[in-house]
Length: 61
Image (cartoon, rainbow, N blue to C red; front, side, top):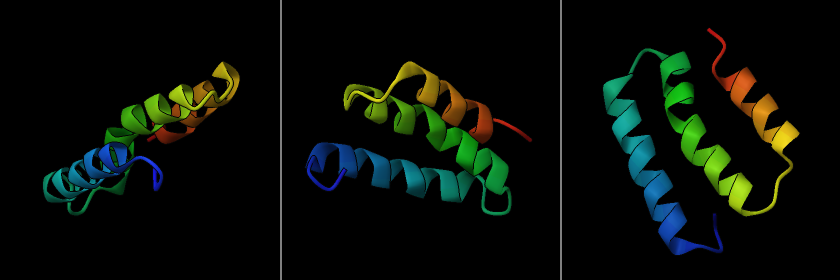
């Protein structure tokens, strides 16, 4: 993300929104950022199996 200012800006904005929406709910916060994170990693060429594993871990409650 450091190399792509647009992605860093989107991620920063999402983190601010999620922290306001879920100030005391870390699980919802993590779940809320998972889609953006996995889409970034996918665009960088991460394997589908790894992306699915990240998604699975981050959506557990």
